[in-house]
Structures are given as C-alpha cells and as structure tokens.
Length: 255
Image (cartoon, rainbow, N blue to C red; front, side, top):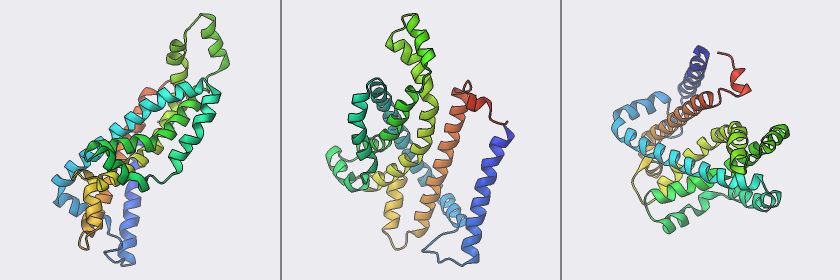
C-alpha cells in the first residue's frame, strides 16, 4: 500500500521539478512556457474560480464517460453474440475513432444548443469505440468450459451475461477507461471552449489562449486539467483494485 501511494507522488514531484528546472535553466520565455510554480501561484490566487470551473469540467467528463460506458455495454453485448453485426459495425466505430471530432464540434453545438448537451454528447461519442471494443473482446474471452457449465444447468442469456461475460469484460473495460479518461477530459475542455456557455476549465482556457495577456491564466488552466487527470486516474485505480480484487492481476500486485 505504501508503494502504491508513494510511487505516483515521487513520479509527479520529479516531473514537476524537471519542468521547473528546464524553464529556469534555459530561461524559456514566459509566453512560450510557464514554470509550474507560476501556474500554482495563479491557481491559488484565483482558486475559487478555478475550483468551480474544475468541478463543472469533472462533472461533464464523468457523466459523458458513464453514458458512453452504458451504451458500449449494450452495443458490445449484442456484437459479442453476433459476428456479422460486429463486422458490420466495426468500420463505423473506426470512423468515429479516427475522424477529427474537432472539425464538427461547432455543428454539434448548433444542433444541440448551448449548455451541457454538446459536451456530454461529444464525450460519450468520442469514448464509445474504445469501450465497445473492450466489451466485445472481454465478453468473448470467457472460457468455453465455463459456458458449457452454465449451459448444462439451463442458464439463460441474462444469467450467462451477468455471471460470466460481464466479469470477463471488466479488466478490459478498466484498461479502456484509462485511455478514455484523458480523451474525455480533452474533449470536455475543447467543447466547453467552443460552447456558447461560460462554464468549465475549457471556457477559461480557450478564452485565455485567444488573449495576448492570458498566458498565466492559460497555463494555470493546463495545470488544473492535469491535476484533474491525475485525480481521475487515482480514483480509477482504487476502483479497479476494489472491484477486481478477485482477478489474478490484482492478487499478484506487490503491496
């Protein structure tokens, strides 16, 4: 447990110290890169504004991720049971994944209007492919012997899904979630900045980037987004250890 807490802290401290040292040693111009100490001072000075904005951004990202996960579980369960549907759907999911979503954010905002709608829609859409792929692969990883055992006692599809396929998909879903957390925060940030609504860190950051005097505010926003990501990954790691304590990968981890 001590290593699990200490190791990430050491990694973050070393990274920030290297960042600070780089800026100071090479005298990087302030409009190019701010030192972490400058970002922290600005964050503390306007902590109330950033705390409120960070709460909004975290809420947008979390709800969007949950919506994406719920849809992916439904779609993935269907695709895992039908190879033809999987092959027909896979190109669509790949298109969603590779098409630059930044290009059509403005259209989504016009379509859904200002507010939470565009942010939640875009986060759910962008994170969907990874969750669907993880669901299908995980549900298909069930041992044939286990399926035969349930079939021998006349277990229905729902029973098989609940007892075998969903637990089998859980590890791959957590892996996909680690990838999707960064994607969700990045999507939230950009859509908040493009949305006709003055909420979230994205609103602060995009407006600061368009101002010639907003460098301090911009880098403080970047720092706040990074802290959100670290907190989110820490919560996810805790959830994975708690919910998947039965899995061999968790039992074999050093304490």
